[in-house]
Length: 212
Image 1 (cartoon, rainbow, N blue to C red):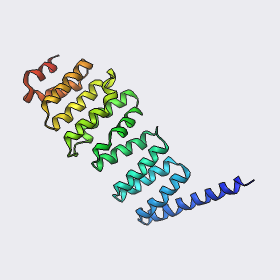
Image 2 (image 1 turned 120 degrees about the vertical axis):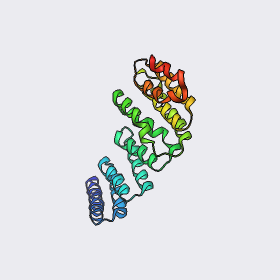
Image 3 (image 1 turned 30 degrees about the vertical axis):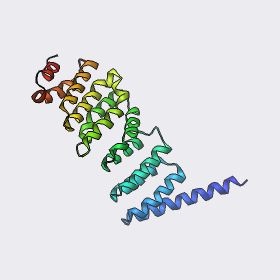
Image 4 (image 1 turned 90 degrees about the vertical axis):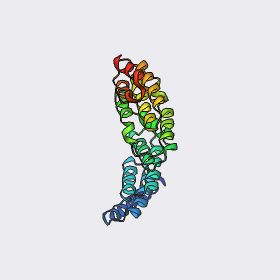
């Protein structure tokens, strides 16, 4: 007998939060809109509202608020590929490289293997603006440990690690990664591409990978 009024009150409060949030967003008051939409997302446990809150914060260039919303979304929906992708991308944008391991692993784990290999190949481009490159190469190597062990993704993982090692001024480490990638899947193109870029500094050892 008492549950129906409670549900009605909750729905009314949820509607109010969304309405006020939308009005503020339309007026350009994104910070206020974010607060109301976040309350609505938590109250309604809605991935759509969480994403809306993230985007409002990003429009306001409020990285910390965007991260808060994305983390809340990922906590409420741990298997959400979109939530985990947002957490990862926002952390990269905030240059919080030490914190990307778990979000990156969750993001990759949520992808089918062919898409995972494609995403791994894109990682060096995603990290181009990161300044802490030595730390980055170490964190990404730790993050890719599950994929290194798989034949379907091992070559891509080692090649991405190699590119990041090279960017961190570690050509010897990059060569080692190319060699490991080639060993994990001799027919994979990624280690060859990496080795071609290393031929000037690593000479015959890199050329051997290309010739195989």
